[in-house]
Structures are given as structure tokens and as C-alpha cells.
Length: 340
Ligand SMILES: [Fe+2]
Image (cartoon, rainbow, N blue to C red):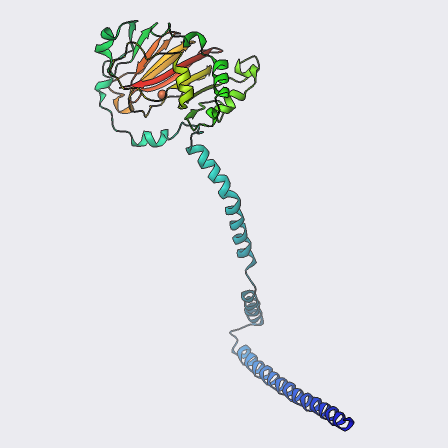
């Protein structure tokens, strides 16, 4: 056994010596090649310099550029990283901005810009010769029949002053009603914040009592919404009937609108609704400005008027541009619906 180990150790030592000898030969070969390459490059360098067409500065610059090419382009990497970071940060923000601008919570009410760009050209017969609203005094359905489907704006004085809503409906009543009906504030009904800072009807009913009453030092507010919740709608309709002067066979929608607030109103716009519009001015005065569509400016006129509590207003808001405002410091409450 001992002899075997000695043989193996000797063989190991001899093996290492053979391997070491092999490595030395490789190193010597590499050095020979390096020296030969250096000598050839030196000859090439001298021959090149003798031509007088290349200077040492040129060769140094070529060497420097070759080193640059081997390095990663840090500036480009920096910009690429910055771009990726910007996209990651900016995309969710831009998404929110677009949703805000194009959604219900828009500075300009929902899709008005799209609607305006795609509306049909008006036939100016609807406004030719109209210089103001036709003012009627409370009248029967039969008396109203000749005017029922006119494009002439109409005020019917005192037409809704007998409605219970004229006395009972106010901010507190609406707040209590909405808060007492489960899910009423979660219903996805259209909400119009106009120039106020509220985003939802829930926000409106969460404002302070002082602000709700527009007490000194508070911002004015004016909002509108569609009361599309069936329980809310049926409760509110207990306070106001179908307007008695409208044709008996006129279609009515399944939703009405409520508008209320102080001072502010709606900017000039067209309504994109399927029927004619009626409004019941239940509280406060409201001023209206009506204007023909721009293509009828040459043959029609703009005008303004105001309505008082108890008045009904009928305007074809699909073809008359209209804006409203409430006198400074005053409150107004209006119910709006359609017929056709
Ligand atoms: Fe409108």
C-alpha cells in the first residue's frame, strides 16, 4: 500500500511538472506573438508617419474614439431611463386628467364639445323674427294647445305656483330625502356641478350648514342632477304633478332634473335631449339668455328675460343656445323635465 502511495505521489509531482512545463511554453508563445505584433505595428506606425499625412494627434484621436465606441452610451441610457420613468409617472396622472375632462365631472358638461362638433346645421326658421319669449298667463290645456310644440320660447306666468313643491321643496328637504333612502346617493344619475367645486351629489349634501345657506364668507354654489332613482322620483313627484297645460298625449321621461343654488347658473350651451323642455321656477328669480345657433346669426337675434317663482318656462333647448344666472346673493330652485 505504502509503495502504491509513493508511486501515486511521484506520478502527481511529475504530472504537475509536465503541466507547468506546458503552461510555460504557452506563455512564451504568447509573448513571442505579442512582440512580433508590436514590432509589425511599430513598422506600420513609422511607415505611416513617414507619409506625412497622419500626425500623432490624429492617431491619438482615433484611439480615443475607439475607446468611446466600446463604452456604453451613458447619455442615451440616461434619457431612456428618464423617458421610462416619465411614462410610468405621467400615464396615471394624464389618465385621471382625461377622465376628469371628458367625464361627468367635467368643466364643460359631459360630452358638450363632441355634441357641438357633430350637431346638424340649423334651419333658421325656428328663430327668424323671434325677439323675446311669448308671455302667457296661466291657461288651460286647450288654450295652450296652439303653442304646445312651438320653437318660440314661452313663459306661462303663475302656472306652477299652486304646486306643493313651491312651498315644501328646498335644500334640507332634498338632503333628508336622499339620506333616508338607502343607495339613493350611490345611483349613477347625471350630476352637473357647473362652476361649483362639488363632484357628486353626496358632496352637495355634506357641505356645512353655513355654506348651504350661503352665509357670509362662504362660496356660492349651484348644481343640478337627474333624479333617476325610482324611489326619489316617486317621492318628489308627490310634490308636483304633470304640468296641467301640456297636451294629454305628450310623452314624459322617466327622470326629471333638479337645479338649485346661489348666484351662479349654466353657461351658454345646447341640450342634447330627445324632447322639448319645460322648467318650473319654484323659488327665486332666474335670468335666461337665449341665442340662435351661429349659422343663424345673420337672420335671428339673441335676447334675455327672467322668470319669477311660480312661472313655467318652455324653450326648445336643443336649438336655442341658452345660459342662466341667478341674481347676486339669491337662491333659486327649479324642476325641469321634457315632453314631446
Ligand atoms: Fe340646458
